[in-house]
Image 1 (cartoon, rainbow, N blue to C red):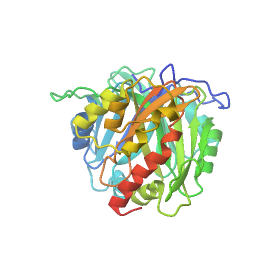
Image 2 (image 1 turned 45 degrees about the vertical axis):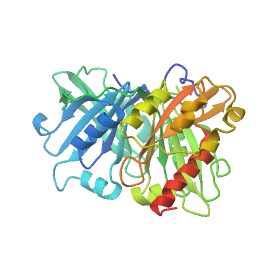
Image 3 (image 1 turned 135 degrees about the horizontal axis):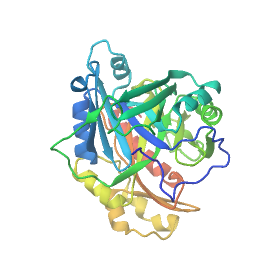
Image 4 (image 1 turned 30 degrees about the horizontal axis):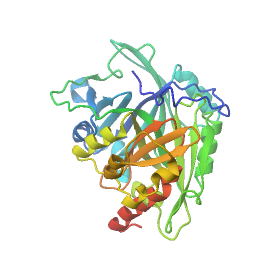
Length: 379
């Protein structure tokens, strides 16, 4: 089963999108990490992911090790090089732990490659067939911003655990899940004046539409600002906001990310839950650290967002943010960076009809991030 980035309330046809590239969902997200065994333990212990599949020396793979963990419809692949001259080492030297692959589930990986490359995508690798006793998978890939790539995965003729070359990973240690369901969206940080070219890439090459936009007046504080545009594919299942820095008195969070990641990359993965209070309590009990907004944020919350189903007490206690749009409201909270470099983090989100991304929370969120930047000496 592939990750699918939608629920019925989220799926919404985007008429502006040219859906010559039908996407069924997000197949998996692969992170290059310094120690895959320890990273897998972290995502299981802290976030409630479950053991799924493994590839490495024991499966005939000699140059790298990959652990696959799953929760709900999400699959994370955690990969580490085994040899000193492996190209993944350079990715780790430059970026630290980070997202390398956003894999998209398609019906026809050959067609996906042909359609995107004829529209200007730079090939990552041409279509290839991978086989084992459980069938075959067709994969192809194109390059994105920085060192990030999209891989198209066609798996209709495959019935194995994950992909050829992997075996089921059975573990005696399987902490309970944390109620995380699917990838809601994934956010990219790109450099100065690079947002619009990548918006055009997703429009022209991938057939996406720009469904929302925020400028430096929407996303700013006294000290820093950024601009963002949200790209969605035609069936509304895949959403990629793209951020770039904007002029401010001090260094923005996007600039900090670009400095430490040494270029563009995935800033955060938003993971959906049906009960954010329960999920956040569970994650906190496991040691996950979240950004905190001042308690004054909640003083006039209901005046801003109107009636909500949740009690304010737990939201205030946990620091959960609330925002409303024309179709409902959402609740969200952001972790601190997952590694020592202030780069990749996770957003926990629960949607109650809202299709937006928390515009009303941007100022409070940015001020919380700036307090962390000040502690790091990077504001």
